[in-house]
Image 1 (cartoon, rainbow, N blue to C red):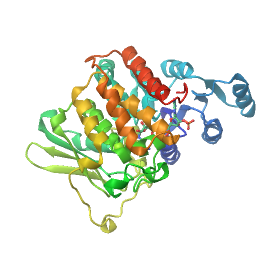
Image 2: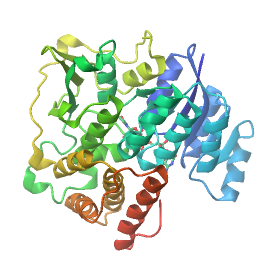
Image 3: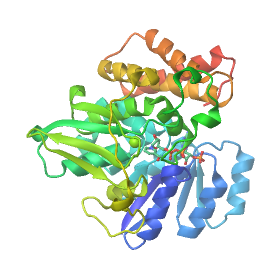
Image 4: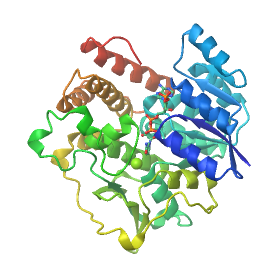
Length: 388
Ligand code: NDP
Ligand code: MG
């Protein structure tokens, strides 16, 4: 029985993970779980699945904490990010799945890695911001990162058994997001609701908006660079509107392999949990005969300036990915609140990158500090208050 620590249990990936654990109850049990604010949902899940320990990172009010503990006297409930980090460092678990959204997931990835546990990673921001620190730490501990992001799970599966020097190129597929077919001249003033209508995947708000701007794909290029030790020239992105091929690997002899399934996160989650085995599952079924056409074409870059900026920042490395990711998180917060227009997301990100003097090898402390500074600076510029 694998004991799983599930972080971000109330989110989109967290909920899919719970479905996987329910189907595979003889193999996996959740030994601790976290959410930020959504205490009711997680407490109900904990009662149903007998999860012994919970932590809520965003509930600071002591009266509310007492109220929640009163409502669920049978559960062990903790509060605050430092409690979560303590639990990751001290409590009993075999494998942790980090499905916290955004830069808030970074500290947890390091706590898991420092403990020497395998890390099933959905939180791509951890590698984009600090891959130069996280990968060597994981290696030095003899543990593994098991990718949960569908593209990286695909590449991970395709590379099984192949030495590194056989890889020529990796192609990450991109659906094009919610705004793929909107006329270019209408993009500037697109509404939040429209930007959230992803054609193929049902995901959390941040990653859905990042798919609309295609910043998500730039983060995934950084993620692939660190995970698979690839030069940026070896990573390409291709528009694939059906999201059935999750990524492709071209080997040095010219053979191209693809990994396919219906777009559903439960499959990469299951593989990350069961690796190196495959377990029988009915959760994701793909009807090959009725898939229809599968199309591949170059990314129309004029539609996605944030993708291009993200690639430039990926090549530059250092503190720049943190600056860009943080600016993007702030811009998304403002866009969601109706303070800025869709086109301003890119403008804010571009300004933040232009104003930054790069630091090539930032420490974790520097990354965390810069992340917070950039975020708060942008919110302040828009008089948006001091929130995180
Ligand atoms: P969601 O927004 O759906 O869920 C986020 C989870 O993180 C929730 O449990 C939320 O708790 C918790 N959370 C939010 N803010 C904080 C914080 N400041 N500190 C600690 N926990 C927090 O996100 P997704 O599930 O969509 O995405 C999670 C990660 O996985 C992201 O990095 C994303 O890029 C990646 N990913 C997602 C995919 C998807 O299909 N959704 C696909 C591939 C990768 P609460 O509910 O209490 O707010
Ligand atoms: Mg992905």
